[in-house]
Structures are given as structure tokens and as C-alpha cells.
Amino acid sequence: MTPRTSPAPYFPGHGDDRYHVGHYDLALDYKVGPNRLTGVARLTAVATAPLDTLTLDLYGLRAGRTLVDGKNARHLQRGAKLHVTVPGGMTAGREFTVEIHYSGSPRPVPSHWGGLGWEQLDDGVLVAGQPIGAPSWFPCNDRPGDKATYRIAVTTASPYHVICNGRPAGTRRAASTTTWVYEENTPMATYLASVQIGRYQVEEVGGTTPQVLAYPRHLAARVRRDFGRQGQMLAAFARIFGPYPFASYTVVVTDDELDIPVEAQGMSVFGANHVDGRRGSERLVAHELAHQWFGNSLTLAAWNDIWLHEGFATYAEWLWSESCGEEPAGAHAERWHRRLTAAPRDFALAAPGPHQIFDDRVYRRGALTLHALRRVLGDAAFFALLREWTAANRHGTVTTCGFTTLAARHAGRPLEAFFTAWLHDHLLPPLP
Ligand SMILES: [Zn+2]
Image (cartoon, rainbow, N blue to C red; front, side):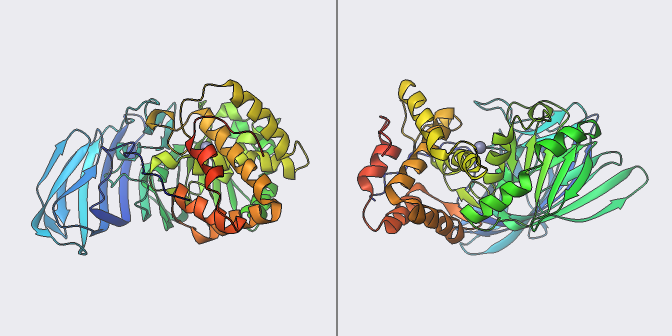
């Protein structure tokens, strides 16, 4: 279909497309009580344009010694931007390292949705970076299309358990502290990088993809019951969407209550209020798990394409319901179509506007669009499309245009009118 002109970036203050970060090496020392963070970030990057200043995102923390390619470099902090002077400048294509020593009391980045990023819990920390919270804890190129690998080492008081993205790569105990090291070798967007600190009991449950549950001891029975079907769910999604994209999946349940669960790469974080011992939030268990494919492996390059995450994760809830013999996806679709018909229609799904990217209507209309597409293509072509979509873009970045083009190929004919109606018009089309 004809690509639409992309809307202006939703968070123009974040990220710099003149360089690409390939790897973040973060060494953090954190004191839970006083909320004191000392960090060293070593970024390996490549310039994609000539640079005499390197601009990073860093919020509320003070940068100290800064080095480019091992040599001291001058820096200037203004607002949430850290400008590092590149001695002698840099040509496009040049690889370089930048090392930033920084410290302070991390606090969430203020936003339309409240504070984002590093957040103190009653007794620990969670990171909820989506969409622009990453600069609250490390200097970064904060744009979702700039994926990198990570090594994250966190030193904190020994009673706490630390969970980050990726594979555990060892712990080291000192007198009263423990250093936890994690390596994420699969490219990851900044907003999906995460540190969870708490007094957690950690349990590994089997399956071809290892699943880890971390929770406060007193919630053990509820957590085991509520996540009891997650292995089955993972197998169902792997059949429907293609192989699970990461090495493992960790669920953290905090002792605090959370408004909504939080997604991170290879990880989801739920609040104590999301576990009731009766699988009352299983819909959310499915939703967060599905984000590992849609959001984390396949990540938008621009936030206006949020339906590629939330529409798919919401449709996954309906598919889970269908695959475990409960209500079929079609029944969910009919019900939500009726509800959305009565709701205000003041945005286009593929460009909802920066303040509406987490609007429930984006989630539901996104899922409805997929169900409508399924009816147009038929099950065989629709599910083949989903599997090709996840395989072709595994660990990459995606756009709406990329999806509609692939869908038309699976349909064997143009779908321009269909996608214009569902993605670009405000009016809700009838379900085919
Ligand atoms: Zn979601």
C-alpha cells in the first residue's frame, strides 16, 4: 500500500540518529535506602554522520569524568541532554567508545503518564522504561530503533536479589554487598533495558524455554497458581507466532501494587495486585508474554506505530482465550467492536498522537484490525503472515508499512482500501 507520510517524531527530545550504539556496558553501584546510584557506562558506537559533539540522554544524574576512545573529553549537561565534545571530530562510519562516570539519586522521567524509568519501591527498585524512561538510570541514545547488546552489573546490599535482562553471568559477594552480572546478547531497545531489585524468592520452572518466577515469599502460592499455565501459553504462542525469541522469560512480581504490568526484554513485571491465586489476571499474563514477540523482538522504529505492539499483544489475549477452549477470538472481536463503535473516534490507529499511544482504544482497535485481517485472508494465510512477520523481523525494527506490504503479499492482492479504513481513517469500519 502507499506509505503515508510519517508523523513527526513523538518524543523529539529523545535520541540522536547521527550515531548508533552497538553495546552498552553498565557497571552500577546502588544503595537502596538512600537511593544513591554511582555508575560507569561504556558505550561502543558508530557514527552515522560527521560528529563534533555526541549527544546522549541522561536525566537527573550528574555526569563526571567522560572519555572518548579512552581520552578525556569535555562535556556539558543541559536539561536531560549530555553533550560530549569529540576531540578532533568524527567522520561517518567511524567506530568509537564513550565512557561516562555518573552519579546521583535516580528519579523517574516526568511524562504525560507520570514518572517513567527508575522507580523506588517500598523496599527495592523497578525500572519501567516505556517509552522514554531509560535516561533515568543510564546515559543512552534513547530511540527505540537503536538496538544494542548489553552487559549490566549491579552491586547492592546482599539481602537483595537483582534481575536484569539476559543471561545471568555470575555473582560476586563482598563483605556486605553482592554484584550481579547479566548479559543480553540479543539487540535490545533502551526502553526495554531493566533492573529489578527486591527481596525475591526465585524459582525456575521447566520447559524448552526456561521460565523464571521471582516474587516475595508470601505470594508464592498465588504466583504459582496464577502463572501455572504460562508454559502452556508459551508453547501455544510459539506455535502461532513462531519460536519464542529470547533465551528465557522471567516474571517478577513486586510486593508493591502496580497500575499495569511492565514489559522488558525477556522479562515482565507484575504488581502484587495482579496475583489473586485465581488467575484473575491471566489475560495480562498472555498480553505481557506476547510482547516478547511484538514489541521486544519486533520493535517499532517510531512510536506512532505502537499498534504493532499493543494491537498484537491484545489480539494474543484473544488467541490465548481461543486456544485454551474459552471464548473464541471472534466473540472478543464482536464485543469490542460494539464497544468501540460507541466510543469517541478522534484518532487514526497508525498515528494516534503522542498522548494516546497507551489509550485502550489503540489496543482494542489494533486487535480488531488483526481479526478483520484474519477474516479477509482466512486462517491459513493469516497465521502464515504472522509467522513470516516475526521470522523476517526477528530482533529487528518494524513499521506499519512493512506489515501492510507483507500482508498484501500473503493476500495475493492489494489491501490498500482495507488498511486505509482500519489504520488511517478515524471511523471504525464494520468487521468483515
Ligand atoms: Zn501492552
